[in-house]
Image 1 (cartoon, each protein chain N blue to C red):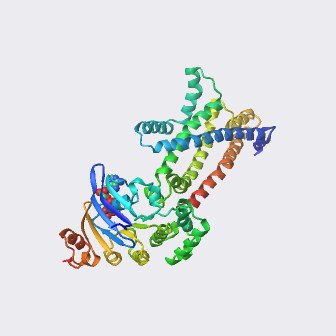
Image 2: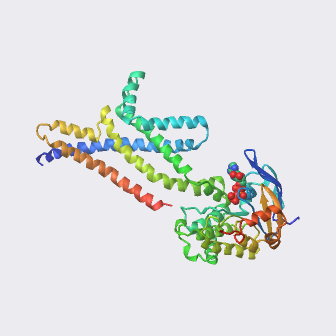
Length: 249
Length: 223
Ligand SMILES: Nc1ncnc2c1ncn2[C@@H]1O[C@H](COP(=O)(O)OP(=O)(O)OP(=O)(O)O)[C@@H](O)[C@H]1O
Ligand SMILES: [Mg+2]
């Protein structure tokens, strides 16, 4: 594929001699949403962190719009890739507007007034218009993650990486955050998403990757993967999310 | 009650204030040096180099375990004997309090820097900020907010501890107080309570606003 937004070729990464990613290859087209699922510790976060250079791969290649990021300045690369983490990672000493404008103003050197106008607009779209001057500690977990999504989007990234952004949330807040992600998908954003929310994964994904022990064990359309997994490993993994077969006896 | 008058006799008020001036001058110089050195020391303390770590650890343990008075005697009398170094009591005091303060300040700086979770710098980097920008806009402001109230508390502790320097011959506020009491031993035998009361008040007036400021900042910057 010549027009991949992101292409990963045989990526390997270990920590202190322990292999974590063992030859990952992947290509994502423009507007495609790829969801990565897999058991804890299989390397999902490490994969995402390699893509925006928070970890350095041991070998393999990562290309952004066809250009290998290995030879590029990582700061420049990150300006084109948005990332939201599991932990609430807003800057606690700045209000919401400060959090939203820091990247565009300081990293992209865009005019402050223009950025702030966009921030107000984008905040309204996720239902947080009245939180412009709130401090992160005054927000609920779900509100914080929505702000974090807006913060990433205001960088107008080519690619958005989401690493279990609802994993630390109370159940009733998961939906408000996932709705924002669904909206982004409808807008045609290219996203690489790690999640444990299987129903959401099925709804948002164009393609699902099942990762285990640092390898892609199965890859497919969501309807196919979630209802007719081909591999025994994927079936066993998906079963851990089902409770109808479990009896209390 | 009659002996209260001793406080206002002659130039006693001026002498007490002068003593307070010496106290504050010693404190201010030591605190300023401690803060400046402590910032550098704190950054050194965050390094993983085992030699630097061991040295820093030894330093910090020393200033925590050895009483400041012992350090004062060691520098003022010990150095004089051992190296034939004559220094004024004030110089010895500044050396000891800076040695102590810079160690404690360094530990506060280290604590403030390492208490910031890793994902804060990750999120800054993920936003495309340079390393310098991450420090400037994300890490240092947060470290500063944690540090400043604690550093102010350290400063008040240092102000109080300067009272020890009267024992190496520096005439600061407590020493002036004692001199006044001694001089009035016969005219005003009950003078001590008033004079020490006045010294108490002077310390209180010097430290209380500083404590209030620390508490105010702590509340305002709580995350
Ligand atoms: N910085 C690091 N240093 C050492 N080991 C690490 C580091 N980061 C991750 N690992 C290890 O790499 C493996 C994969 O971690 P990773 O965080 O990528 O897993 P994950 O699939 O995201 O898991 P989870 O679903 O629990 O988030 C784990 O065994 C983890 O302990
Ligand atoms: Mg993870």
